[in-house]
Length: 278
Picture (cartoon, rainbow, N blue to C red):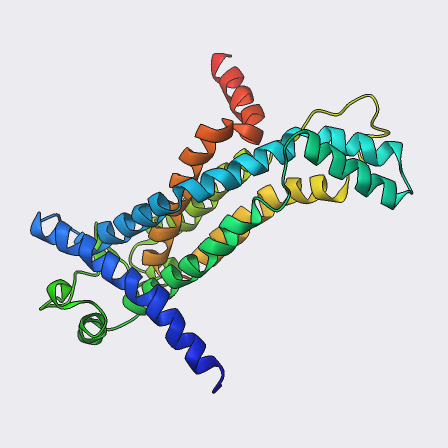
């Protein structure tokens, strides 16, 4: 525990405190403009600010991911051609990466850089929405700089929905909202997941339709399992956290679309269009 204390102090100084100040700078702007439900819009605003800061890094990550997907069929051919010779497979795969200007590690660095910020956002929102109004007021004013301090507790409702309550807690009072939140959260995550993972069509060189490698199989399953997990977790998390997550995901969908279009969602989209024409 003694070793963790300095690390937590550093994390608070470098991540938590700056995030809190950005959040309440956004809140001060909305409050000055008399925007209703300023607390909820501040969470959305903070998420957008963070997304914009990391926009160039995320772009590089998405571009690297698209390149990896583009050469995935060629990598599969190498694996089939030199099956059983792991050393040759590795050598030929690295040649492919070099020929197509692909760096497998390029997508990892932006994620590693963003991870502390994402954890900090989670911590900030959990701390804020779970505290009683007076306690939250004291907590906020103990962190933010003097011009951003507030004199009264901020409104913890967003269009009548309590930011600090989970859908599970809302079931008795707002059942439709409680059901909608995890469904929408899972749906947005599904859209982003399908767009990220583009499955190439099977080639004649493939032995069987079921002979896809582990990575391809994992991607297919993750596109369904991960959204279900996120939707399930959002049922027990405070609504303020779902608001942040959904804003983050929607922004990600837009950015993903600009880089690689509909990706793996294109098949579903074309089927849906065909059904509407019947």
